[in-house]
Image (cartoon, rainbow, N blue to C red; front, top):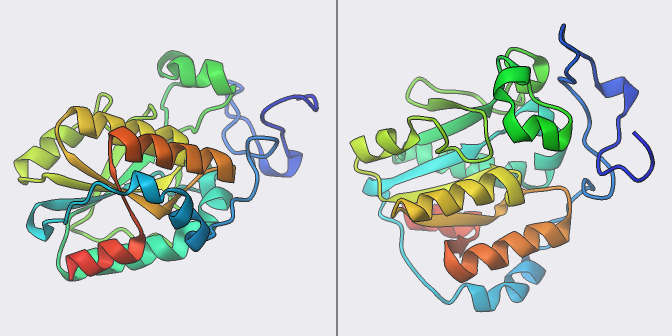
Length: 234
C-alpha cells in the first residue's frame, strides 16, 4: 500500500491463505501508533463524563475480554498488565469471564463489510487468530467466536448472560473504538449496565481512545479504571 494508506504492510509480518487473504499483519500507519496510557491525565480529561456512578454487583457481573489475539498483540501491550490483574480478581470471587475470539472461516463469503473496509481479515485457525501467549483459558471460562465488531452480532452472548442472571457487563480488550465500543453500545441497547475500562482497553491512537471514552461516558457506559473494578469486586 502507498504512503497515504491507513494501513501499511510490514512484509516480515504477513502471509496469505490459499484464497489470497492476508491473515497476519502488523497494523501500523497514521491510525495505528503505540498508545500511551497516562491514567492521571485521562481521568482529568474524562472527569466530567464520569459523573454517573454505579457499583458492580459481583453476583450479577461478567467480564468480557475482547479479542486478545496475536493479530492485536502490539496494540494491547499498554494495558495488558491491567487486564491480567482484573482477570485474576474475577477468578478469585468468581466472576464469569468471556473471551471473544474474532475469526472468519470463509472470508470471501462471511467477511462482509469488514473485509471490504480493511482489505484484510483474521482467518480462523491461523496464528493471528490465536490468543496471545499471556492469556490462559481456564475450564470455567467461555470462549465466544465472533465475526463482526460487536460481540452480540450473530452470537449466543445475550443468551449466555441472561441465563446466568448477568446484569453488569465489564468490557475490556481491543480495539477501544471498534469492537469494544460497538459491543458496549449493543449491550446498553439490550439493557445491560455497561462498565467500560479506561485503562483496560486500547486502540491505535490516544485521541481515538479518548473520543470513545467521552462518547460512551456521555450516553452508554460507566467509565471505570481497572483498580476501581477490582476494589468493587472484593
